[in-house]
Length: 333
Image 1 (cartoon, rainbow, N blue to C red):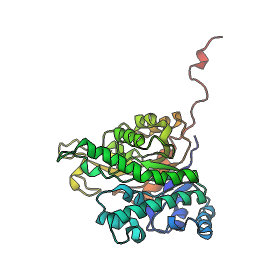
Image 2: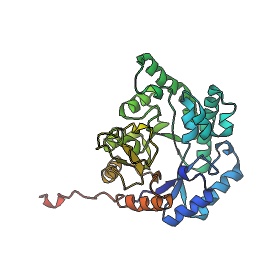
Image 3: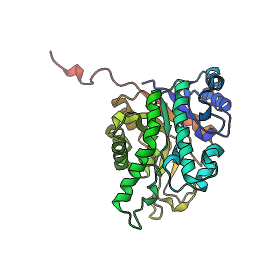
């Protein structure tokens, strides 16, 4: 298919964008999925023409292109409840402010609007990110949670995100929500409910990242077909399942990444259990021609090894579909 392969910069925010671009180009990536994180992108500078030119100039110098940007960290704070020390560590001083929860949510929402404006000035039409969720804390459903409380969570999401999506619409940009635990949409049914909550508006679609579905037991290939019209972006991260000893479970016992007692762990793409070939065939079947973005998260492998290896591992599945039926030769006039 010759789809472009990009490197997601979120896990590289300790380096400058220039440094990440140099690495990615050397490994053979076609471009970057740049995160609004670290020094890489500042959404509040969306109207600074010199700043935009500087960011694009870095890509041009290294022969890289841009198809999407992301803002997971601030998107997380738009709906989350509670807002606490975890958010202070990820949203930055401008959004955190004095830490008053509603103020944090309001400033996070404003940054997401700026991210849509920034995307348009950078020449891209897709922003990848999280939404946060006021009801994720109730996922265990005990102590008992009234149905009205869950419904209120989806209503809260719609109330907070529709004004953001209005800006996305006005800028001609789409939001690709990463289906992920701790978000409003984290599996099949919650994704259906989320789309219903905002009236299936086209500004809101999905970022297909199979790694978070694998440990939940979701069929990652069927998910592509089920939401074919909403797959706006693809992030590739792998998951290795190891729950066969009767001790490890999907909740992983509060054990840190890389701990061998966990029931699963993230690994570099191609080293886990994601059925990549079937997934790529499904992406081809639904007509997805956008970027394939590599997201490195592997506690047991250095990123300088994992990032180039993942690219090589998945490129082999990006083959062209057949132009004719294999049984055409048996047809009779």
